[in-house]
Image (cartoon, rainbow, N blue to C red; front, side):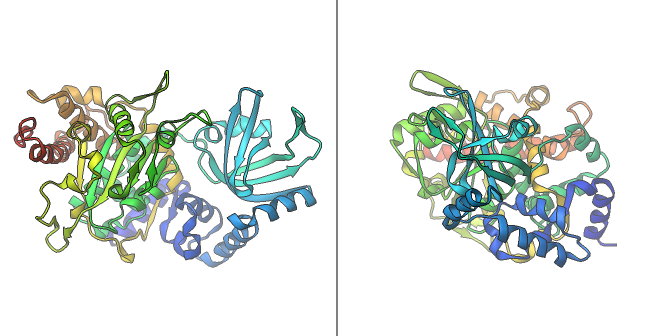
Amino acid sequence: MNTRKSLDEKVLAHLGDRVVLKPLTRWNDAYKEFPRYVMEYLCARYVDPADPSIGQHKIDRLLNEHYVGSEGKELIKSRIKEKGEYTILGQFQVRLDASRDHYWAEVPAIGESYVRVSPSILHKFSDVLLTCGAWGTAILEYDSTYELGRKKYPFYIKQFTPFQVTRLDLDDYIEKRRLFTTNEWIDLIITSIGFEPERFNEREKYLMLLRLVPFVEANYNLIELGPRETGKTYTYRNTSSHSFVLSGSRATPATLFFNQNTRKVGILGQKDIVFFDEIAHTEFSDAASTISVLKDYMQTGRFSRGNNEYNAQASIVLGGNIDTDIKNKKPIVSYKHFFSVLPVDLQDTAFLDRIHAFLPGWEMPKIRTENYAQGYGFITDYLAEIFNRLRRTNYSISIERYAKIEGLTSRNQTAIQKTAAGLLKLIYPHQDIDSIQYEDYSLCIRHAIEHRSRVIDQLAIMAPEEFSSNSLRGC
């Protein structure tokens, strides 16, 4: 019996209602615009893996009839008005308008930000609708008689069915972990994020897990530099709705921190992860001020705008490309230091010293069709919510008892503890620091030291009078 088949059978036996056959979501390239967790929810609900075509046709019909593209907004609003009600599929988010003592739903599918919502929906799904929002289907009604402050607000969400997990049991997830070996569990996690574990060696699997540490460890700062098409963006875009990908665009204080016009907190206060994709092409508005605030946030988890101070838990991930010798899996030698590929404004040693780990993306293989998952993995949104819950568990205090390395700066110590904590949450959520095997625990510590050392090595090139490349050697 091959490894993939035996793992799939074990996964189905113990996790049947929480997993999906990953290749089922890839039958139609036209659906790439949908988050993977949306397609996986639909596949888990409608598709029989033994005979997928019938279920796939149902999904085709559902999306064709109820998903609204940007060009169809006015047509759908007209249908809601003329028919009295209409079912649409899309993303929904609710906010409290305290000045009017009213809840409003934002419905991008029809371009409306002031849509009334049933109190029963809020009662049932407030945890998700009032935070990151949710994809789902909703029945919208039209009532031209409703007014508030002499203004009409005719659209009303009568019924809502989310495509995402809204309730889950972390304790049950932890208990299920006990049924799998360490290697089986790592392979299950990698399959769950969309990759085929049999195509990667042990080192590459651990680097994939390092990519996931920001999902489970709050206020974690990671950088990955490597060649294109190794799965960086794919991972952060598709693993969780709590992740936000900022793709080579303009990063403003309003986007990141707080929008003074709308009085809304920026993405650092809304998401678990902010991934700066193509960081070399990211332009920072009012760079000195923005990076100063970001630098302080990466150290303290707080930022100030005006007279107000805000706490946030978003992890920061910087992703960039670096010219690589693919055959030998190492950067070409023309770089004085690897951080030279970053925007000049980010080549600040005080900023870079706040990065907890440097993932060597040049060691990752380019993703080809055969590298995508072939077996069963956790439904993406289920795993995303588990990751979100794991952020609330604090391993660092326990780890400090065993990973207190004499002579380290506080930043080095914190970086090592946070990376190790994240890896332990991912691989051994069922263990505590007192029960885990020493060799397993020490492996996570060694990875944490290695990836923090890579940061220090580059800083030592940039500022040899302040940093020593030997400071973590022998730890």
